[in-house]
Image (cartoon, rainbow, N blue to C red):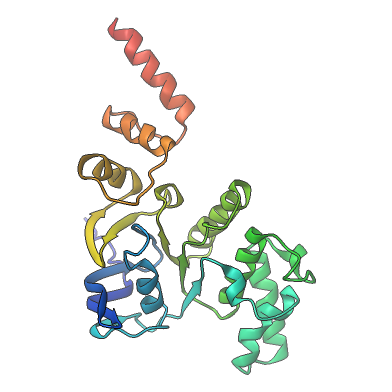
Length: 268
């Protein structure tokens, strides 16, 4: 029998606390995000999620405890991506980071091409950043972080300003960056249905981790049993959790519902 290969951590927080104006924002956070994983953080507004995002991405430093990103580069995409767009043209915005790293023009050009390819945004290259949709702007923000060769991508409430179609497209892009490109994703949200791809999720309340789960459906169950204020499971996830409780698994809800109907009819 061969031993399972150990998964290296991408981000490790140990006893991390942070205060602002003598108000404790997060306290005693112990967290390990495996490299290459899709990791979710969920909690109500004001729970400390954004502060945690800033600490993971290096914008803030812990006042207590320590954070280790294990030599990996961490990129942050804000809830309003317009706040991190610095240029009028998409191509120029993506080039901004690599240019400030004093990279050669050939390398900068290659990074623009690869990052636009990763987000399926080649068509955006010459577009004005002021003229594209919110979903496209979020993709450009991701491309900017990819151009900086970020290993870990922190998404802080990245779908909150998007319409349903743009939100679905962005979530698909994030999933692909994780699965196809091996990027570690730390997705922070107050919506559980944003985190369906997460392999592990923690819930935060009042700056503390109050619940840990291996996946979104497990956390939906915790929400129904214990109540986590401010978390929105959504009707589809509640139904899927119900089916799982009945022993019916699968992401295709139509097939799962048919299976449920057949089992009910078989008992009559």
